[in-house]
Length: 248
Image 1 (cartoon, rainbow, N blue to C red):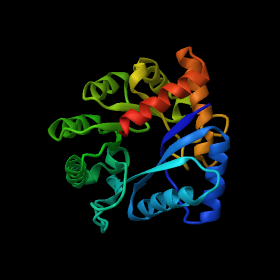
Image 2: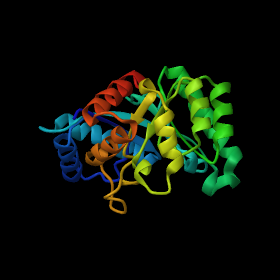
Image 3: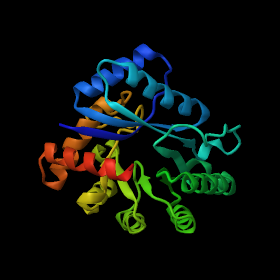
Image 4: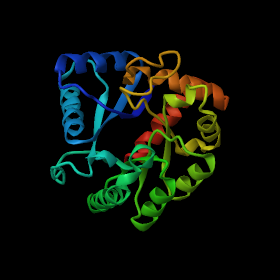
């Protein structure tokens, strides 16, 4: 299979460990992946993973998304305007754990949407228990890109699709309680669906509970292909082409 993991994090700066992870991903059919930031530390390791991949003998092509997520409202943020990146992210809103910082999250999200617009870059957006505010912000500051690791309702997924966004499905779709994610995965049209690991989190069944990595993306691809009634190879090609369009 020819796979594109559109969202993964690297929490280590160990070049040997990253190189091995990338080699395993390549062996599993991952031709491209996007290493995603979200904090000063994750921005650093995402850029570092791309540098390791560029020097490696066997590795997928690594694109980079840099930004500051909803947990960075009080953090010191380095200007990333001149950084070499494919997307701005991850950015967004999360009221599940941090509803008390809503106003600060909205300010940070808006600033980065404006930055992405100035730079002409897509965004990779996190939204959890915050879809109404996320939708309102994306209407106020027109943007393009990916709603990553989507776990909301099928109805709200359609609203994001109507704004031109792609919907990315993670290994959560394989979890028994995630019926809403499976319903969404069935409803998203062929030309707007993506896949991701969100590693090192959310390893798909049967690896749930272990550290996730890009090489596991094939399990999510196979699950979704079966769910949607298509061949895994065809679904991998479809989502690969979609990822290239989403990221320009």
